[in-house]
Length: 306
Image (tube, rainbow, N blue to C red):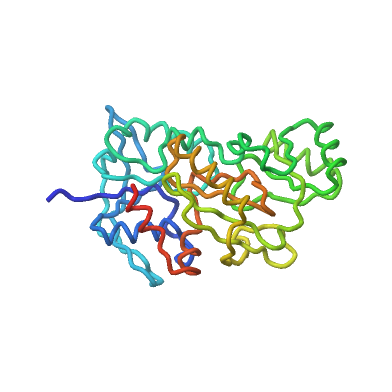
């Protein structure tokens, strides 16, 4: 019988947090369904004569163990021979990430890739939500100091973040115009995002999970004391709180739109009922936290609906 292979484009296995990692949850469920796991990092990919190869580690995964994987063998693998391929390496969405989407696009007619590489390239995580600006707090995207100064003066307190930021990195609260800081951001990132500060972030944000065009669950992530960052990598704590009618309505609108854009799995974020602009499609996280809170394993839903 032909082997069922799941290829995973991921970040270093040495950096995996087994208590929170969504990729591990998805891979363990696939393994239970008879898939062999071929794991590779983006820098190991090559294209030649119409084929895309990767230096893969063929791994056996274990749940609830400190040593959560064993390398069975290493192979230079033609990725088109996989049944499914998951793009799961962490942001930033830099030039390397961008380039890999073009390489993987060469084999989409042979292997089901999640999320679709063309869609990953086009659904910019911080800018895609501008289609739904009526549900967002007051937002400015600019590198014009004059416009930025006006925006801060008008909104009093604002959150500043880079367009290609991730995991809450370089997200800061500004209470006044800080020319030196803003010039540093512009020099490093060019255009930056500023949003009116929503004080109810202290009560947590909502991470909503979208799979195959459906709202399938959510968690609330409460920042640690004194922080405005709801990322669990920054010390936030997950809780289960029901979505409001508005959050559910907007989530369903986005879910439908993301499916049309060929995004299978996404995470979207709200603060105080407002969409804050983060549409996570490169490597959505939070399924393990949801599982721990509800005992519902959304990895099963993920694979049932592929």
